[in-house]
Image (cartoon, rainbow, N blue to C red):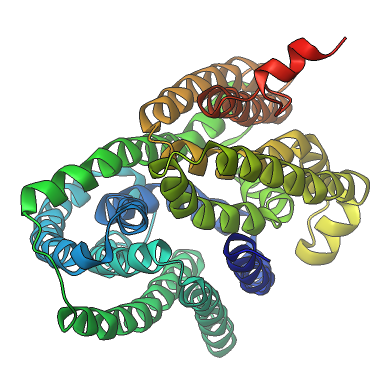
Length: 444
């Protein structure tokens, strides 16, 4: 078994356990927060992740690509530059965030402390990103797997412990749920950065070659800027989406509380169940970025084509059974795990979204590895614009309401995956059927 499959299977195994824990986390949140509280929690998380994303500046992606492509003798020099820049950028971002936070209206409905806790996340995410990128680039996936599992296990333990000991009113309960997320990220930071610094000290004792800071900056920014722009765009639109959905539903005659509850059922129940196997596609993405980057740097087209076929076939093998289970067992799944009967229909309607989402992540890894970040960004913009238009037009129609919103969500993922796939096929020289172009001409 080659190193790609070994690393992927390791990540999938650890991620499966982690997703089981994540499933339990969402069950606890649904039970303790209720439908309205869960809707509040799910509505604010995209805004939080937007701020956190700026702290990471997509360093895991750019660093892993650099490590995979470049000579090991320059790794230590590159990392020393990154550590210095991270200290400076983190301080600047914390200052800017502390000034802007009081003026963000999305936090007005939440506990006053909520918005200031985000400042704690910024340095944690920034420095953890360096360690993640290094271990991804060196294909040391066991450390990534342990960190991912540890994060979810700590969050679950904190949630169960705190909610068993204390009773909280709604705003305080949402705040405590967010605090458990910060606590889990802190534990991951302590683990990953500690292991990283041990290896970094070891690298300093090995033969190395000095690299100028401008060269490092240029290499990293070529990846970080477009990928960060893409992620910021998605994070911004994800932060705006809950308000667009609830606004459209309100315009269609749905009360504000009911619209929030319906969004909670879609995002907190249906999406949680349907996206459960997404840990497999995420594992593919983590492994593919350095693997594709290295193969592309070596101009190994045969490997690029082979990996695409393998990933597409494996995605179909787990994706199709997943959507069949979600469709035919929607009611037992939603009532058994979340005690929500209303979410069953939403789960069935979202099946196309689940299936195509499993393809999006590995295809996006291909685009990053092939240096097509600009194309990935353009695809994201167009699919989101079309999806938002459908969500507003159909969601605000009294005949469609949430069904119209779900049609827009499905349309976005389907369009995005198809654009990614056609672009990747064109770049590596295969048809959409994953055959060399000449082979189609030779067939009768």
